[in-house]
Image (tube, rainbow, N blue to C red; front, side, top):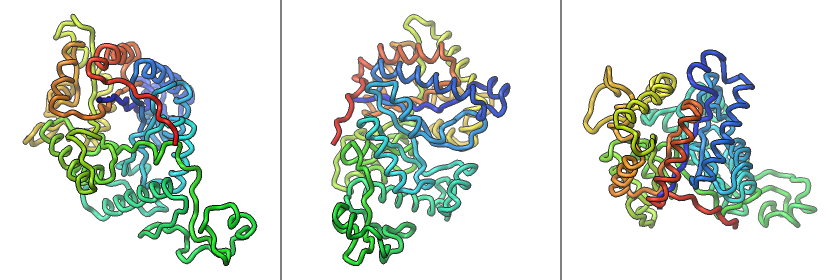
Length: 423
């Protein structure tokens, strides 16, 4: 069964509002309207049977396009208004967090949502905020270029991930790695005052020794979901990332239009899984990012194309050209063997998104055929719908959400899952 996750970037308004209320990121009225809009969206997605909704982690976005500096808090707030919809992030930028602190916060959020939390992870690519917030960790934003910065970023990502998993799984956490030690210093923390009276009697066995020295710690609480919430990797598109996801049983969400490249990356994921003794079927445990546009049957083809073009144009400059293209995400729309700029000069962005496969659009029956054709070749577990709520008008966005949920999801078993039982 394939599920649908809405990837929603909390935007404070379309381009005209960004200009009129500069800097809209610090406009409290705009932020309150955004929260109210997200509540409406989550209620609709919950009623329609969508599997989940998620947000990214980004800081200091004065422009107002991705106002999500604390996605776990947003998850908790929005979950109050839903019954079965899962809430998560794509993703939390691991190198910018202390791993124990993040493990605690995720576990508490998992309890508060009673298992309706999923956890997405990312390495971080935005230097404006990551270089500032990570200065004490000695790590910066990076691309996958094998540079010293890239290696340092990967080291902290991998180490923080390993520490979080140990913290969730083990009653007594000890760790000795290249950048992090538990306890610190390695030889232990001496002279713990309540060693005999409290910790030695009631704490985790082995936490404190007979001399009153701390030898490990117990990270509390353990997650509500056993052994931990479902794990995702945000927008993986490199062979190294897909192999790591397979090795660690983490669901990648691949941003790639080319079916040829998708198949190669999915096979690399399987190789990583096989190296750890898992044998997933082709497509199992994998998500693919797409944008959907759905219109009622009977809408003429020329009107469908015109409406998609108009809608894409609403966020073309601030999002795709002004943002995604500058950070290299348009590579996901490159054709097999193509060279040169993407899109090509004079090419309409909507045409490029459709022709590259990143955008699936049309009438209900047309989208059904496209989804069916995709799933026959790529039987994935998750579609991640890049849903530009706040940029696309509400009166267009909600009807498409409803058409997809009522007309398309039931035909392909794209239905919501029941809440996860606690451990």
